Length: 338
Image (cartoon, rainbow, N blue to C red):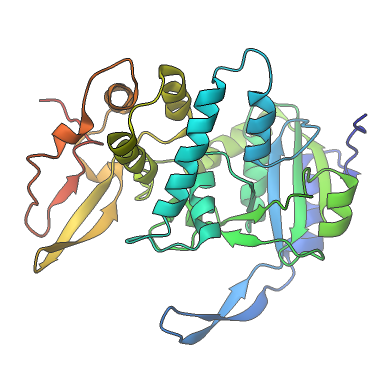
């Protein structure tokens, strides 16, 4: 029998909770560490001493998305079939390998972090280094209770902490000061007594008033905004390539993916050409003349789903690189009105 969750402290207001955590944790000086570039050059870095997680609502557990998905998929009436679940697992594994390759070159944990950040279930739980962002995530929705967890960036038990902004193009992750912790096999629930003890996590609870929701709503929307995020279209492009190589998904799995993965363009600025290779810089949807999320979702549905015969690869058979200075998008991810 699961024990009822009891926070480490309940406050009478969001302001009281913020003031306490700010004074107790966030005001402490950052840790001074040495980093190293890919070429081996050492440089000084400042890293946060504590990480924060905001939750809006009275959730009894805090598990990673992979475990939550496993529990949901085992229930009667789950929208995905066992074959869909298996196919989703294969897709996630393939994508994680793709992001360790050029041009990304992420390590394994950072590749999983990218998948996590853009909606796919992994063994990572989100945190942030910015206390204000944690309170934004805790208070922006229509709930009456908010919670913020505080954890040392270097917890007492060895657990892998990953930066979601490992590359300079991870703009939205940088905006959120996003971190994550990789949940070990024995680490199931961050609200459990075992996790709270071994990782040094403290949970703080407070009521959310309508005025709190109004105050944080715009900040929340800005933190999640995709239209100015240059990496928002990565998953959509590579899932499309996966379908071209491996075959289409069921309508149910297609719908599930479109409800979780950002529907954004894979867009870039052509900077120069080196022999036959184009040098490009990633750009976001707001660099394009227009972008209709509804139209793009429907086009992607037709590319991914067995219910339709559309072939996305036909969109690139006549693709021609534009001259330096041009803003272009992969035609499989951008369908402007004729």
